[in-house]
Image (cartoon, rainbow, N blue to C red; front, side, top):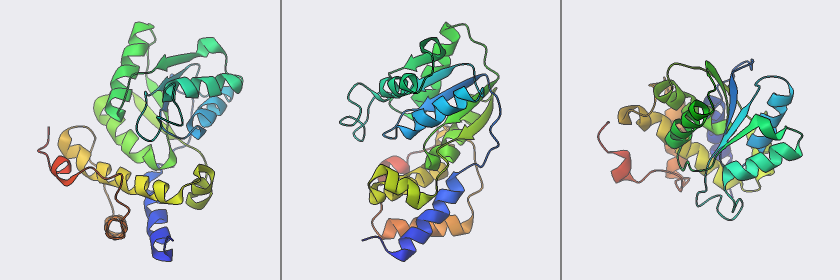
Length: 224
C-alpha cells in the first residue's frame, strides 16, 4: 500500500523531473533504452510529425529489461517503431550501451560513423528521466542543443500503464539521487533542486522507496 503522502511526494518529484520543453525539429531523435516501450512510441510519433529525419535507439539490457526485452532495448524499440510505420532506413541502432553515459557516447559514435552532422538532439526518455538525461547531455555532448520529450502522462496514469506503481516511484527516487550526485562525478551539469523536492525525496527514501538508489559507498565516491 502506497500512502497518500508518498503519492504526493512522488508527484512533486515527477513534476520536477519533467523539463517541459517545447518540442521542435532537431537533427536526430535519440530514444534512450529502458523497460518502457512508450519511449519508442513517442519517438516514432515525433518522427511522423517531422521533428527529426532520423532516429537512433540506444540500449542493451539491464536487470529490469532482461526478461521483458531479451533481444535488447534498442532492438525492441526499433521493432516497435517499424511496426508503427517508421521506415527502416531512418532508424539507426546502438545495441551496446548499459548506462546513460554510454548511451550518449555510443550514439555519438554511430552518427559519426554514418557521416551525420548533428547540431541538435531530440532526446526521448521516460518522463522521470528527462532532467537527469538532459543534465548528462549538456555535460557529455555539450556542443549540441538538447530538447527533451517523453510520454505525455501524469504520474498515476503512467504508473498504471507500467503496471507497477512501486517500481515507478522507486525509479523516480533513484533518478533524483543521480541528479544530485552526478555533477560531482563529472557526468552532468549542476541544476537547482528546490528544498521541497529534496525533502520529498528524503521522505520517500525513509518510506523504503530505495531499490533504485546507488549504494552509499558508490554514491559517496569522489568527483571525477
